Length: 165
Image (cartoon, rainbow, N blue to C red; front, side, top):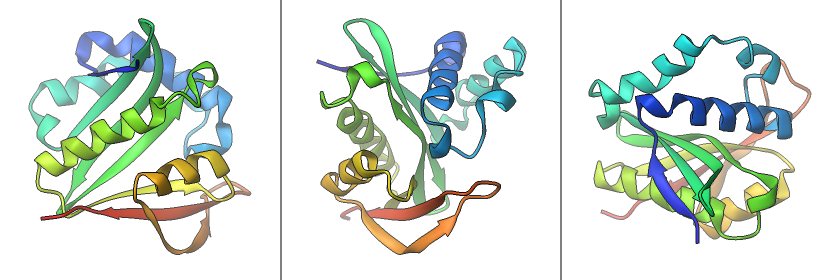
């Protein structure tokens, strides 16, 4: 059974390792690259998680999932006005197909709902069958047509989940 937990400032090595694994495993799925982020110093990785600890957790929060005690996935949810956005969703290949992605999304959606978000938004790489199918199973629907990802040859599809009042 996957265990979801929030990441705190002292967890920056876990966040760094998950993020770099995600970028190496699925480079087409993210706006940044492994080459860019692997150059970050430990201080920069720590600072990325320090903001939630300083109170901005009301606006955003990173979640990690562990399977059998091993970090196996990541999702970051942020409030942006009246809606929430989900970023950096990734599940390790060895944990896929086991409900890990759904558990991460459920945690992010629950977090957004608790903050009275009207909807949750995300982008998925167009043609990314497994991720798009997961999002649709969770209730997300496509918004508009796919658009080019900046600096890439791939396209991304915006999706939205409307939250009940």
